[in-house]
Length: 188
Image 1 (cartoon, one colour):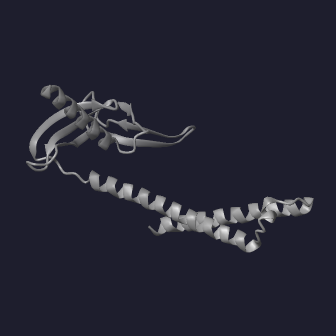
Image 2 (cartoon, helix red, strand yellow):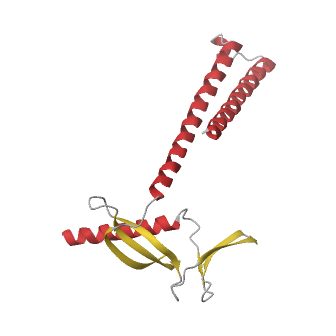
Image 3 (tube, helix red, strand yellow):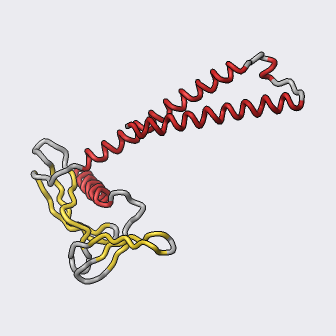
């Protein structure tokens, strides 16, 4: 939270400085070329520019700080939602293929009354030998780092979906969507 506030204050200071510089440049250009600006016509003085800069500073600080709070809230909700345990009631087990590898998934609910959900029990599993694989990150390649899954049993490698932040969560969402789809078909 302190980091977000610090970023907001720094952003506010920077925007205030930018506004001050722009106002100084405009008034310098007007004086240099002897032009009468709309600012002169409205008889705006330096204290008004300072007031404007303070308003910009406060507004931008509030905007950046509220954005920071929203991002932190989303991160906390993601962490809270990720703390799931294995379902205990009406549990279905399946090994599914997703992202070029297999996953052992449980689908059920925590209590008799709660909504069912998916839970990745193990994975990623090698599609060839069903051995649990490791995530490997190779650094120092020309395009940056290369990420892939590697099976220690058979030696095969499979691409890692780098565009997805939490692959297990994505697999769980795929399974949940599949169960909802199947449930809708049965109710028709």
